[in-house]
Amino acid sequence: MTFLSSPFSLEAVDLLEAVGVGAYKIPSGEVSNLPLLERVAATGKSTLLSSGMSDWAELDAAVAILKRGGSLTILQCTSAYPCPPERVGLNVLGEMRARYGLPVGFSDHTNGPAAALAAAALGAVAVFSRLAAGLREVWAMNAHPVDKNDLAPYRDMKAIFEKSIVTARAMAAGAVLTSADLAFKKPGDGIPAARYAEIVGRKLRRAAPADHKLAWDDLA
Figure 1 (cartoon, one colour):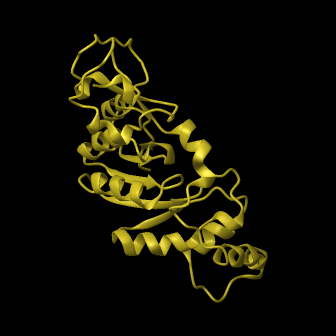
Figure 2 (cartoon, one colour):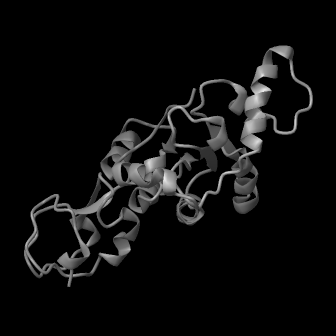
Figure 3 (tube, one colour):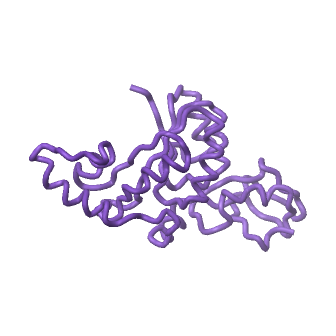
């Protein structure tokens, strides 16, 4: 079996490399953490990208970075526990395959086997009798396409699980921020980690302690 793990920080990637991780899984809350994705891609290891809380624009940015590394598989996922049939989004599997030309998979949060079976064998017309009950759930999934750009169900979760930009150390007023001065921590209610490139090179209007969650009015 291949040893894989989900890192939640740059330091975690370094640790996993040190202990010989074989592959990476990017969890839904880290899709917009572009500095983390760049670090993972630089390892050249195979990666599974979970798409649970992300719209197409966020996935496009993540895929563009991770394709620089090893092989990439994108997982359709709905960040609900458990996930009802109406939100599984089987339609997204085909949309992902067409959009990215990459292998696609399914990260399952439902209570039964129907979603995984449907994802593995879309279009099957014959099943064993013991799977018949699952067909009702499959029909419900196909009857409710999921819009990947509709982030309304994830608004609160994104604020909790995604990362904001904070200071990595105490900084003096007027200091010019470099990438080494930035860290990325939960919750995601500050400047998103995905916008880190807009922060590098900006000056601090006022002194800031370590772990200060940066706001746009902190910057000159």
